[in-house]
Length: 193
Image 1 (cartoon, rainbow, N blue to C red):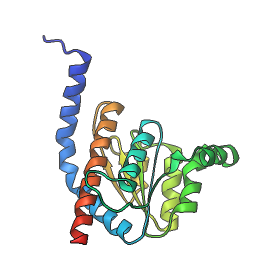
Image 2 (cartoon, rainbow, N blue to C red; image 1 turned 120 degrees about the vertical axis):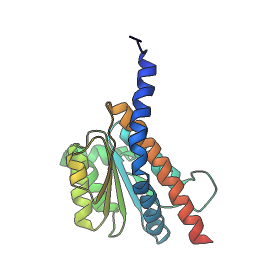
Image 3 (cartoon, rainbow, N blue to C red; image 1 turned 90 degrees about the horizontal axis):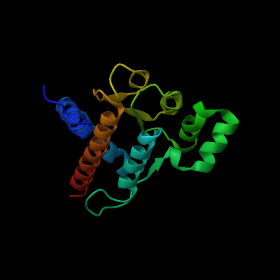
């Protein structure tokens, strides 16, 4: 029997999960194209997550406000967890479950998009945000861990990553973020041409 060091085992797990993930590429392509239509039309992207998923949500918004690969106009994208004064005040005054929902009600407009990232798909504050977004007329997309999960059920569309660990789910969420950005930029370029 061959022993695999933890690093090699992690790479093997990622490779296995990536194989299944590739079958979801059409979903990500569609999201990038739809997002381009929303943002070039004056709409906004809101994004949220907890922990490592928060970092990836912020990575997505940074790529849209700044740029992914090539220079292009800036687009409106807000990572809801990044305003520490708002998040801590809302948590204190309304409870942690309302941290993102209240911001969705403040910043979201009908037709905007809310992207929620969660390895578990069960975070109460993200579920509340999805409810608030749907009530306000936003489109809700979720990047989660294995299906089924409550966030998948509470979203308009979801991409659920099947992987043995949260770390691998997060790694594939980052791949999805970059794929969305690539599809977004291609759609924007086609529209400008």
